[in-house]
Every structure is written in structure tokens, then in C-alpha cells.
Image 1 (cartoon, helix red, strand yellow):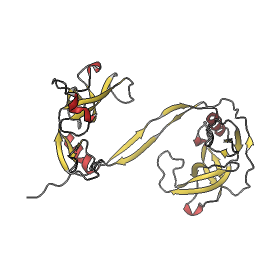
Image 2: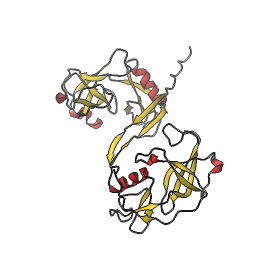
Image 3: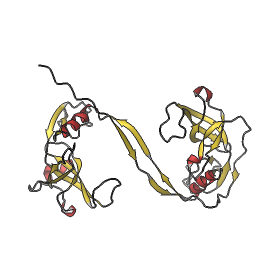
Image 4: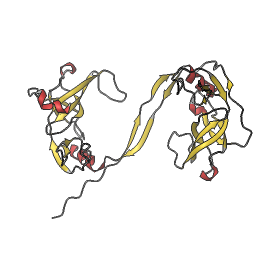
Length: 319
């Protein structure tokens, strides 16, 4: 009799992004508007240092600072790292160097890209200058990158009033991370079981807590977990929240309830949506069971089982 082969470890692309709109104070507004106009601004702190990019509060005294100064568009590389595989939406689509540049007149460094033919062409102490973007909108990307420079150094920082026509007062920060995710041995088995409408966790051989979803190791005892245990399918609502803001690309009408659910036999709660009951009737201790859609690989939501509510002492350690 041959042993069953282990399931193939899963891999899938994953994108995490959360673009948001933020307003700018007077210092950041002047800095970004200045970039749009081809001017690099910094601030002078209480001890006379010039910080670029500028900050709104003195890092030493925590006092508000508003003394704007203009610095040069040339500077010196203080340290660098070569990037031979640019990712989407990085400053350049060909290999380049990430550099910290101390602009002429500044006492701090600015992180940006350096367009260079290869790592042998980059060194600490080399002189560089700003390459401005062809179209500028008032963002750090108005500096397209830095490029090698062999001209004269700029002078000292000079005062600037920060006044520009049509100042930039807000930006959209488009934070995004895309990568290939592998859930590992433990969660691969967990996902495979879900496709069979079963929920499988792993028990710690030391403290005997059953982790769902499994993590491959007990975070408390620090030992591997290999003993698989089927839990549920029913469970108990330990705590919950009412969602009143509709999420983009999520076809669920608000308000709805998202809850922590301790499945029977599990040592900690997982989260899931509660349906089949008015949102204002969901409560701690409510007994629920999973609802699967046709072809679904995980429960669509959980609904009441009709059982009496669980006693608080039965789930208080899982809140």
C-alpha cells in the first residue's frame, strides 16, 4: 500500500491596494507645488538644518516649522542600491539605482531613482541632478529621476515664500503591493479541505490548542503543528461589528455584520459574514453554521442554526 502524496503547495498572485485622498498642510502644499514649477523646497529647523523633503514639525523640539527655503536641483549620492528588476509603476522601466541624494543646500537626503547604465556607473559621492518629468502635476513623480552630473555645485539654501499660483492642496496616495503568495503546507491543506466543505485545523502537540486557519506552528509554544483536526461546521459568534460603509467591488448591501466565529472544537475564532438574520439581531453567543454557494470554495456566510445561544463561559476565552 502506497502513502498518499501530499497536496501541491498553492501559489497565486495577490494584489493589496488602498488608494486614498489626503489633504496637504502649507509646508507639503508648497513642496509639491514647487516640484510642479521646477523648484525644490525644504524647511529650516530651529538648529539651522535644512530638511528635504520638508516636514511640518521640528524633529528635535516638536515645534511647528514654516521657514521655507529653496535648494539646488543638483546634489551628491550618499548611498545607493542597484535594482535590476524594476516593478510596475516604479520610476523607470529599465534597471536603475535607488539613491539617497543630499541636494546642494540641504542637510538631509531625498530617496529617488538614478538613471545609470549599470551598477559600475554608480558610486557614493557621485554628483547628480534632477531630471524633471515632461508633464508635472504636483507630485514627487514630477522628479522623473536623477541623472549623472559633472557641472558646478549649487549654492546655499535661500529663503522662499512658498507662494505659487493654483497651489496643490490635496493628493491621491495610490498605495499598492502586488506579489505571488504561497500559503504553505498548513494552509494549503486547509484550503483543500474547504473545497470539500470541511474545515480542518491543526493541533499544537504541547498546549493542544487547535488553530483554524492553521499556521504550521503554534505561536505560543513555538513548535510545529502536524496533527490535523476537523472542526465545526457549526460555531458561536464571539464578537462582531456592523458594517455601514459599502466596499468597492463587494456586492453586499449595507448594513451587514462581520463576526468572529469560534467553530466547535477550534481553539480560536475565525471571521465571517453573518446572514439569514436582521443585522440588529446578531449577538454574542449566537449559534451559526456555514452556508455554501454552488461551486464555492469557502463559506459564503454563516446563518443561525436555531439552537439556544451559547453560554458566555463557553466562549469567553475565544473573544
